[in-house]
Amino acid sequence: MFELALNQDGLPRDGSVYRRTAARGIVFREGRLLLIHTDGGDYKFPGGGAEPGETREGALAREMREETGCRLLGEPRLWALAHERRKGMTADILEMDSYYFFCQVGQEQEALRLDSYEAAEHFTPVWVELAQALRANQARADGTHPWIRREVAVMERLKAFMDSQ
Image (cartoon, rainbow, N blue to C red; front, side):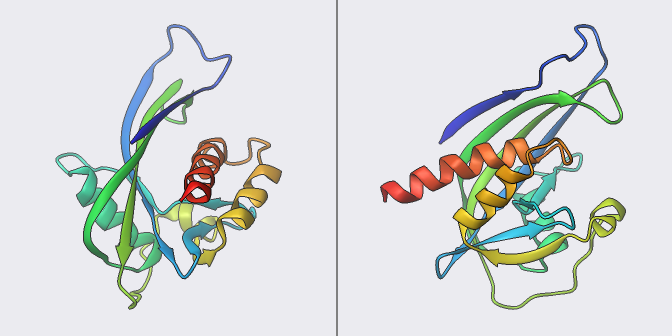
């Protein structure tokens, strides 16, 4: 497992802080990666925040079903942890730990159950080549979506890992 830290510049020293733990899935099938495509043209790993009392693996299974319609198969394998500190929406600062798991999903797909903001941004599960998603996100690293910087860093590390195999 590797860890990376992403700290946004210019955050207030004594601002309010909201802490969150998230679980995200890395799923490959036939050389393509299962990602969420948004109407902004960027890609993100499926997953999201753990609810109170929920394990990271439980959050991953729930979020995968909600965002991709796919059920996890077997045990996910932890691969990376991204520590993120950036401007928050409900507090001055968001501190989020995103755990990335290699996992497998079944072939069948259920109906998506998106949150209102996910539906508004037209979250769509797609199978895409890692290099294509990385290029698209690098081109969109303008701050439109706060997750792009994190996902670019993880995709770059994932590409280096996959190239070394």
